[in-house]
Structure formats: structure tokens, C-alpha cells
Length: 341
Ligand code: NAD
Ligand code: ZN
Image 1: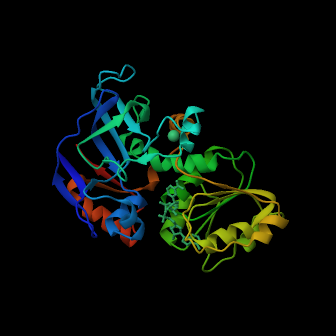
Image 2: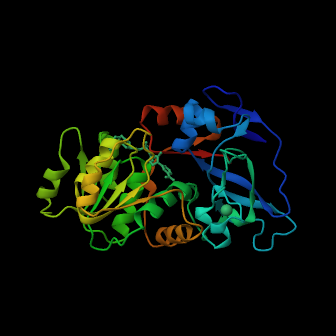
Image 3: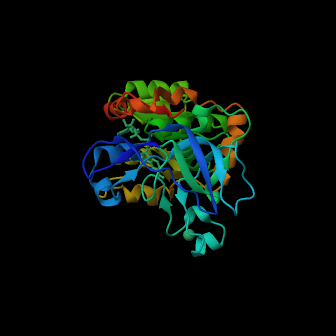
């Protein structure tokens, strides 16, 4: 089969012929239909220090996908060929304390598809049945391919009650703008999104933000005043991975405000801890998605008019992957879909 492989320990990716995976007794074999490129894939493509530490070559990469089940292992009863599915990219151990208690998203030793084990940028993917999510009938395949990153946005945005609340989102990347759409869907009042990239700020507005702020030329404080806000934001979602943005967020929260940190910060990132203390802020780190509550929420929100389609900037055939990665590197892409059919 064809697959996008990190073949050698250096920048780039190559389209290779590799053996089809053989599903075990607890696995399903999926014929991949669409995939999407994630920032993680870009790290692997660029072969940065994280990728060098993490990826054992050769590795088929990719974890954002949708496909059709074509075969099932002997122990699999709940899935059948023909079903349209995506999958949770973290394969959990099943035996640690959290797994045993049913908190699988908190597994102490999960392995990631397309990172620690063979991934989804391929014609076929074998996945444990416990990681399979069946889509509702009629789902748009491009949208279905985005359930993994949409799950990050949903998992982050829905940590705290949003109804009637004012939300500040720092970073209008794909996840930030999808979070804006989720906050709108969930009944937030004002949704202010920040970035430095005018195209991304515009996308944030398209997807439901009340106000987009280019932090190079405008202050968030001034925008609060313009909106008639007097006490600061109730909810903050850090989705840039930038420490200046993190401190902007902390500085603009109300007393007792709640912050969710999804963006991956540099190790040296400094935080104004006294603002956290004096303003009695709650900070929660967010990773991945919840198995399978986030997946359920995504499915029903997509079913009830949550529209994330504007986040798709490119639709390419898998052979055109280099074009997709180049657009991601240049910052001119939001989500890039690769078609494997
Ligand atoms: P992205 O890099 O495409 O978007 C980040 C955006 O932040 C960019 O548009 C950038 O211009 C903007 N930005 C940079 N500095 C800023 C500043 N000072 N103020 C406001 N905006 C600023 O990333 P993404 O794919 O949307 O993901 C968002 C973040 O979440 C990334 O840091 C990513 O690594 C992280 N992430 C975490 C998880 C997790 O499980 N915790 C999962 C997926 C992604
Ligand atoms: Zn576990």
C-alpha cells in the first residue's frame, strides 16, 4: 500500500510502498478515505528537536483520519465492514490506575498513532477496536477527518460552563478558531480571539468570534472597554503556545476566572504567578480528548449545526502532500485535507 513515511532521521517525508497492516484479533482494518495534517505532523516533517527525541524511523505518520472498516479481528463483535469511522489516536494501556477506573484519557502510558506506532497517512490502518469511533450516517468525510483536532477544541472549550460567559481565546490557529465556533454553539456571550495573522483573525470572525484582536496593534483591555466589559473575561482558552499570549490571558481575566491551557509552551515560559494568586484564577492543563465523552459531544454538535467547514483551507490528493506541508509551513493554511481514495 501507499503511505507517507518518515523514512530517515532528517527533514522531509516520502511516499512509499509499505506492507499492508495485518489486524490482530482485537483490531479493525480501516481503508483510509481522508486525512488531515496536524501541527504534530509538521514537527515530524521538519525534524525538530521534539521529533528527533520522539520518532523512531521508519514511521508511517498521521493521526487525523476517517475511513471505512474493511475487515475485523476474530474478537470484534461491535464493528462491521462498511462502517465509517475515525479513531482516538491515543492507544491506552488498559491496566494503569486511571484506565482501570474508566478514565482512559488519563492513561499513564498511552502510545500515539503516527508517533509511537504506525499511523494513518496510508491506504490502510489497523486500530484496536477500543479506539474506534463510528460516525453518524451522512457525515461529511472532510469534517469527519477533523474529529481529532476538533476534539482538542471541544475538550478545552467545554471544561467550564460557557452559557452567557465572556471568553478570551489566544491564538487563532485551526484549534483556536474551532474553539470559537464551539463557544458560540455553546452559548457564550462575547468571544474575543487574538493572533498576529490577519487571515487567521478573519477566520476566527467567520467561525463565530465577536471580535478579533491583532495584538500587534490593539490591546485586549481596550477591546474589553469597547464591548462594555468591566470585570474581565470569565473563561480563557490558551491556544497559541506563546508565553506572551498566556500572560495576556492571565492579565485579562476576571477574579475567579478559569483558564484552560492547550497550547504547548516553551520550557522557559514565565508566568505572572501573583496575578494568578491575587485574582484567584483556576488553571487547567488540557491534553488530547476525553474517551469518549468528547467524541459524543462532537458528533451531536455536528448533527445540530456546528459548522467547522471554513477551517478547511486545502483539499489535496495524497500525492500532493508536499504542497500541503509547504502551505502549513508558510502559515497560509488552516486545515489541509488529503484524499486517499
Ligand atoms: P497553530 O500553531 O497553528 O496556531 C497558533 C496560533 O497562535 C498561530 O496562528 C499564531 O500566529 C498565534 N500566536 C502566536 N503568538 C501569539 C500571541 N502572542 N498572541 C496571540 N496569538 C499568537 O496551532 P494549532 O494547531 O491551532 O494548535 C494550537 C496549540 O495547541 C499549539 O501550541 C499546539 O501545539 C497545541 N496543541 C496541544 C494539544 C494538546 O493535547 N495539549 C493538542 C493539539 C495542539
Ligand atoms: Zn493506562
